[in-house]
View (spheres, rainbow, N blue to C red):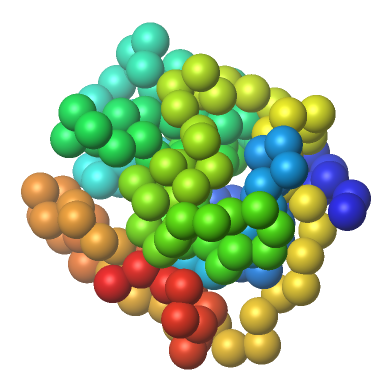
Length: 173
C-alpha cells in the first residue's frame, strides 16, 4: 500500500471528505477501508471545534494539512479526524475491516476503539510509519446528507457534509 501524498489533504475540506471514501486507514497491522466521513469546514462552521477559536486543543487544525486530530467526546470515546488546514478537518466515521480488525468500526468511537487510536495519536503526520492513510479503491456509489450529532450548530447541522458509501453494511447508524 502506498501512502496518500501531502497534496491529497491540501484541498477544500469537502473534496477531501468525499475523496477519503475508499482509502485505507492504517495503524500498525490494523487496516480499515474508509466508508463514511463528515466535513468540518473551518471557524465559520458552527459545528466545527475551531468555531470556538484557536486553542491548544484545536491548534493542530490550523497547522499543515494531513495531520491527525484526535479528541475525547462525552468523556469516553475518541474521535479521529484528518486535518485540511485553516481550522478545518474531516471526521472519519466508519471503516470496513480489511486486516486485523476484530471489533466493529461503524461509528467514530467504535472506529478508534477497534484501531486503538487515542489522544496519543493527536497531531501525527498521516504518512507513517505508525499511523497513515493509504490509497484504496473509491466506492462506485456515494450518498451525501447532514452530519450526525451536531444539532447545537443550528443551520450548520443540516448542511450535507456527511458522505458515505451507499449500501455498505459498515456505515454507522
